[in-house]
Length: 381
Image (cartoon, rainbow, N blue to C red; front, top):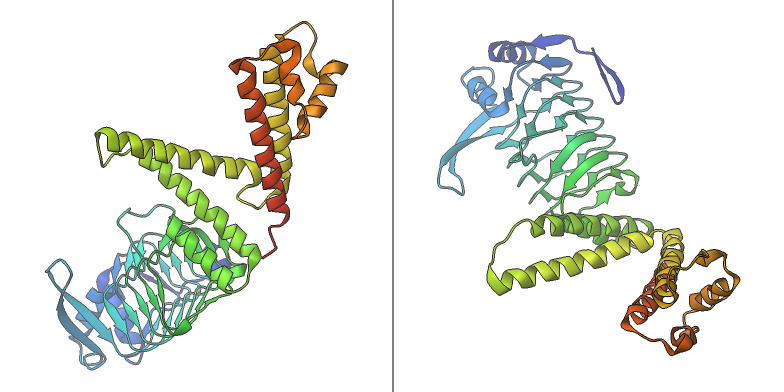
C-alpha cells in the first residue's frame, strides 16, 4: 500500500529481482504483459525483460528483436511487442526504462508510481497509451535524462491528472493524435521540437498546471497554440512563462562566453540591455498580466524621481519633502506628464544633476502609464 497524490495505491505482488519479474509475467498470461498491482523493487528495463521472454515458447511469437545502428554508429537492439502491456497501479521503486520498444497494442500505466528515474526514449506506440493519474514522483533526475526524447505516439495518449514532480522532457517527440494534459501538474516541461501530425491537439491543456517551462521555445510553443485556439487568457500566461524562461537563459549567458574581445563586450552589453527590458516588463505589469503592478510602478517612479529631483535642486533641507505644501503642489504638477517644466528652471539653476532625474522620472512614469493601459487591455485582441 502506498499513499500518493490521488490517494492510496494497493499492491498485491512484491517483485524483488529480475527472476521474480519474469516469473510473474510468465505465470500471468501470454496474451498480455501484466504487471498490474505490482511493486517492483528492482531496476526495470523492458527491453531486457522482453529479450528474455522471447526465449520462452509462450512469448516467442509475441516479441520480435531487431538490430539497428544509432546516430552515433553503435549497434543497438530494439524490441517489438505485439500484445498489450499493463502496469496499472504499479509502483517502480527504482529506475524504470521502456526505451527502444515498439508497442503494437495498447499500453496502460493508470495510477502507476515512478519513484526514481524513468524513460520512454525513442519508443513507438501504435495504439492508445494511458498515463492517467500517474505519479512521476522523482524530484531530481539525471541531467541527461530525456524521458520522451524522439518518442512517437501514433494514437491517442492521455496524461490526465498525471503529476510530474520534476522536468518532463518531450524533446523531438511526435504525436499523431490528441494528447490529453487535462488537470495534469507539470513542475517543469520541455516541448522543444515537438511535432503534431494530422493536426493533433493538446486536449484540455487549459486545465493543466504549468509551474515552469524549461526554455523559451516551450513557452513560445504553448503561447502560439493558445493563440491558435483563440485562448487569450492562456496566451498571456504562456507569454509570461516564455519571458521568464528567456530571462533565466540571459542570466546564465552572462556567466558563459563563447567569444572574446570586442565581440564578447558587445554580447554582454546586448544581454544586459535585454535583461533590463525584461525586468522592466516584469516589474511594471508582469508581462501584461497585472495592471496593479503598472499603477504601483508609476507611483513609485513618481515618488523616487521627484524626491531625487528636489534634493538635487534644493538640497535635503530640514523639512521632509512630502509634508511641505509647496513641494506637494510641485509633486502633483510633476505627476502630470506634460506639466512642470518650469520647476526645473527655478531660480535659473539648471544642471545635469537635476535635469537627469527630472526627465528620467517623466520617461519611466510615461512607461508605467503605458504598461498599466496595456495590462487593462490584456484580454483584447
